[in-house]
Image 1 (tube, rainbow, N blue to C red):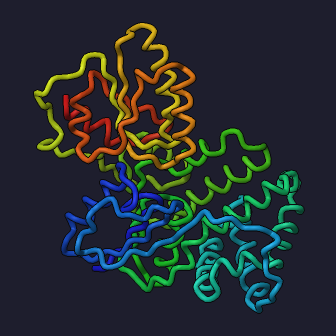
Image 2: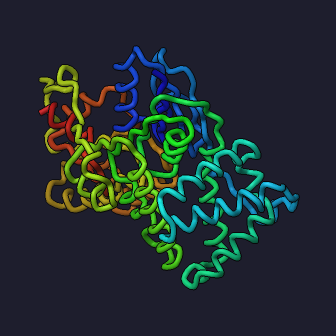
Length: 386
């Protein structure tokens, strides 16, 4: 059986709960062959895991490059007007609530064929494409209020979100996506074009986490993207043959977003109790431990500011934050906040750790400051450590 595993921003290039899940899934299904579609937005492509031998190929999709109107090509391509723009319009109509899941899926299949043929970069850099977006958005009252900067960013972000469609993947028996986002469109294409089964596993709810990303954005821009993120989740739920999640809370979100309850199953996260267990090495009194990524979604700033209050009550308290830096600007912000609050002697960034069980056992208390989680593996591991 040939399986494609879609892993945006995680395995094998980042550590974390989803990456651990993916590694264990592949390793424990050693009789099956896997390809991985990895969507990455950084430059560090050093694998953080030993790739199991049953992984045959890793397709790498790099996103995040800038796009400028001045660089758009004015070269005409026959497919641009006859196929690309009508398909893009149909997909946008669905994403803004004016078309069906069936029509949207047909548009996605056509876009995928065009991306494989021409490359999304060529199609999106065309001056014709820029003009199309200007006409499309100006015809919608609330979209027309977006600034030029927001419009440019919208086109660039749409291009990046659709970029996985340019991969010429062949056919699979099963496509398994770890996110109900744009990368899941590959699962829909594989189902409709090649008869694959499409499985969706959500550890955290894609729509909910994207809403956090929109905090502070302007009204029309925020409304546009919140609508799109909701609709893309609904499209994934509609076409998935099976939806798996890790908690009842996630299931409630999925049902609210239109998922058929009959498709949904809950498989709670587990933990290796032979590894994660109490170790009689002595707890550092008044020590706070957090094992997490340095990332805005993990809300390390909230933990730092909370430590400011704790230090006022318990001057000897220390906070040890273990985990990789996935957003260096956010890390700079965290370090500046530690300095501003005079907490350099109390809050320590310990870097990544290969044996988190030792960190958990060091703590008097373990905290998880995240804005959004499904059923965080770090919390379960910490509980197993006592």
